[in-house]
Length: 225
Ligand code: TMP
Image (cartoon, rainbow, N blue to C red; front, side, top):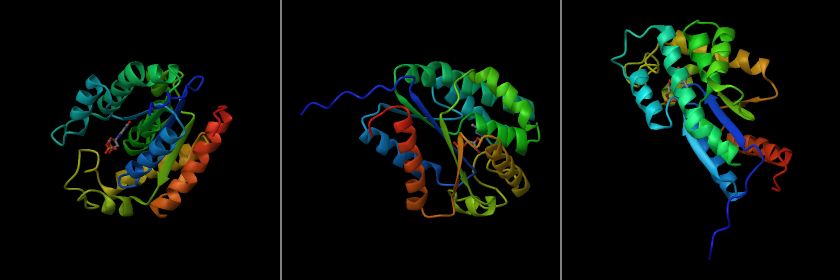
């Protein structure tokens, strides 16, 4: 039987997921992707840093534990460069074609990790983000909130003191606490766009809350769901 064509959505639909290490983003992304595909949407899943080949190469530099000497502003500019390339090459064209984009981290991650974690300032990073993304702002962002101690312990073979994992994961607990506080403060500043989900709940409970919000968004976009 022929599969029906994906349904275009005027202007597309953009969802990003944010959270500390081990917050359960990947599981939730798979659930949202499957849900939207079942509604007939043309779904593109991407990640940051990364996405298109140029951005994936920037990712390697950023996450390589050997990049120890990296200056905080250099780090920010590389995240922004990766993001810019992803927006231009992948995200914007997919939205323009009426598709759905789900991004595993996006601009808020720079606000939290570089603005908060590296202490560069949330507003300063936000202003630079705008240069990189223009008006390509998500319709909806989920922030999976969890204490860093708990999240790091859940991660793939990580310890709260680091030692394994990528260059950012290896940062100390104080860094990850600043990241979390920055995410929480940023979510309070953007209550319409950023939904905070308690990531200590079961994966099922988190997915249920998230999918209800996605359904509301589909209806608001005029998609029959
Ligand atoms: P992940 O793919 O495992 O989430 O790894 C990406 C790492 O990069 C993660 O530790 C968060 C960090 N990060 C930043 O510090 N700033 C950013 O803007 C983004 C997108 C990610």
